[in-house]
Length: 420
Ligand code: EPZ
Image 1 (cartoon, rainbow, N blue to C red):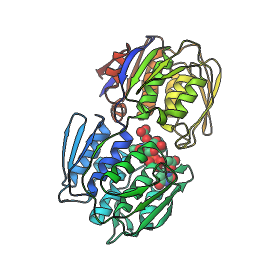
Image 2: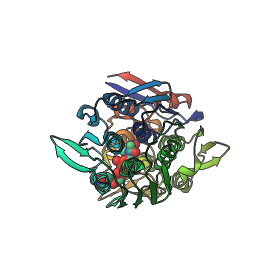
Image 3: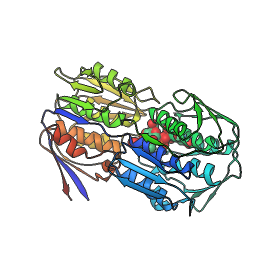
């Protein structure tokens, strides 16, 4: 297994390009299954989760060609409708093939995703939505078994105890594209990744409107065709590098960024004393002053994203005062805290909040990554810590960050990957 070794204390400077959004491309690749025609997806990040969804699509008997950041999917005829346990257990987002398969072949067998380190993550909203469209769903031997001879449009409310669900909205949207009549999703997720999926589905011939609002209307069509699409920039990757610039008192420029997707992040970084300059398609992040403590609450979009909570906690760990970070999407998503404390941070968990007492500096230590964003937080902490930090179990990192050590090295970080 690989580990990442960082010698902290370098100021980051320079320019890098943000990759395509992992969380947009996963449902988009699932959506290519809604037609027999070829679809071409560009700006696809080279990360392990993308390889996993490609393997699931191939397991259905579908041809996929992947070269660089371009993926071609040529569905033709399916030989299977099962997303197997071996793949789904490595990536919960695999559940997003459920809606597309059900709509296209009338049958889907998807391994029930298990729990995960960031929280319980049930799939009740996905199933509620698909059942409302007329699917019959059973659980057999750890699999969700869904069948439908004909899906019919319906009014569906998808809000849950922790807000709307991103992938449930994606699944229901995909299934409804080929249903008879009109579907109205209320309490729909408004994340930019849902907007990107809706735009791709419309390019395929779907009749979707309102897909940047909590009420999405889908007028079912008989058939969809292949389409070409360039995936949006990854706002979470961008946010992670913005925090890298801030935590190292650096001056970095990010290319291929969509500012409007980063409103809450820009606002919070400015409040912490970081200068953010918006240019033509680029964003410059510079810090000259000391970091001010701030309170952050994660919320569904356009609120502050849960996928940047761990990274923001790392930043506040070295701010001059007390910050309160409250997690409203996954109340237990604080696995990074004990590892940050091993590096000298002073963070206490109180229910769904982390109370962060900023310290002057962190000290490098061997730490263990528990999930994708926790890994990123530990790398950020390592960049500012005194001495050497070794982050192990970095396979989590490879699931969602394309060439993170290379990008950070370009910015001047002393970081390398080593075999453990
Ligand atoms: C997506 O997961 C993202 N994954 C996650 O990113 C992200 O953290 C999450 O949205 C929230 O923004 C992808 O897009 C591939 P949800 P998703 O359903 O859709 C509860 C990362 O690090 N819920 O919007 O699976 C759920 O437990 C990952 O890149 C139900 O109660 O998340 C949570 O509390 C991790 N019932 C809340 O809703 C359901 O049926 C939001 O989860 C579904 C979800």
